[in-house]
Amino acid sequence: MDERQKSLLKEIVECYIKEIKPIGSKHLCDKFKCSSATIRNEMAILEKLGYIEKNHISSGRIPSEAGYRYYVEYLMEPKELSGEDMLKLQTLFSNKSLTVSDAIEKCLEIISDITNYTSVSLGKESDENVLRQINIIPLDEVKLVALVCTDKGIVKNKQFSIPKDIRMMEVVKISEIINKMLIGTPLPLVGERLEYDIKPIISKQVEQYEAVYGIFYDAFHDFIHNNENIHVVGKSKMLNQPEYNEPSEIKRLISKLEDEEQVRKIEKNDNRDISIYIGSESNFDDNVTVVKTNYSLGGEEGTIAIIGPKRMEYDRVVAVLNILNKWLEEKGD
Image (cartoon, rainbow, N blue to C red; front, side, top):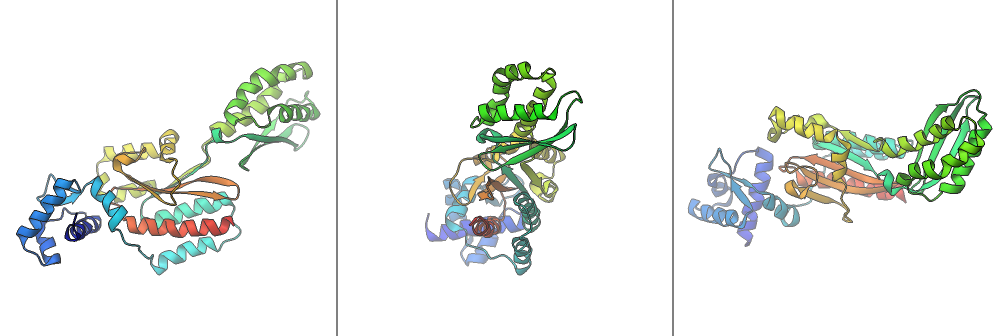
């Protein structure tokens, strides 16, 4: 591809992102001061290379997935955010009182507001966590809080009530047995070990062992199967995109965003600071672009992603995530 073809492709991509209209030769003739025959010839070459394609309802051309990919890799120029957008981010960054989870959730709201796309955060799945400790904290004679801690520094808690004829000390003693036997066990295997290793021991030491066993089983079950570490903000932003103007398409995408298993597909091992998956490159959906970055903050690891149409303002989204990455690095030091 020569320099003129690159310039034409860049103009086609950026104009289509902005105008949402197929690009015809007249617009390009006016822009590049070339004859219509020259422009049509160059567009034919770009189409043959697979970077642009015909639009069914117009004689103009639109970028293909390959065209967007080439643009992102070789033609996109860095973009500076407006003062208003920077102020929104800096207000978040200057708030030292926020917890990690609150900071991430607030960050999603600001990202979605700035970009007008859907934003997602995904904490590491529980199957990547190993049990470090379980603590039982009595609140009174019948109420207690079970704290489950992992090697990743994640702590979850759940409150329980125990039968009055079971002494709190018995429950605490069982927690000591669990700590002794299960430390270092991957969380998905804890349930199995509770059933086959711990339950027989409890049955010999506690008369109503089923109730005590249930406390610990429920604590681990909730930890493993809850989706509290997934946050999706701005699902309604999909309605602002003309690509998704069919009710059935909106319903399909929103349904995916509400499905933990589907959203988890956004997680993809990638060591790059910012990763861009366009259309069929995405594990999530062929009709979207996913731009994501990984974070490690306050002992918690995860992914922040922005989801929008393939006709995404890539330079703007990348600028937002670059600033976010810089803040996360500084906060993590």
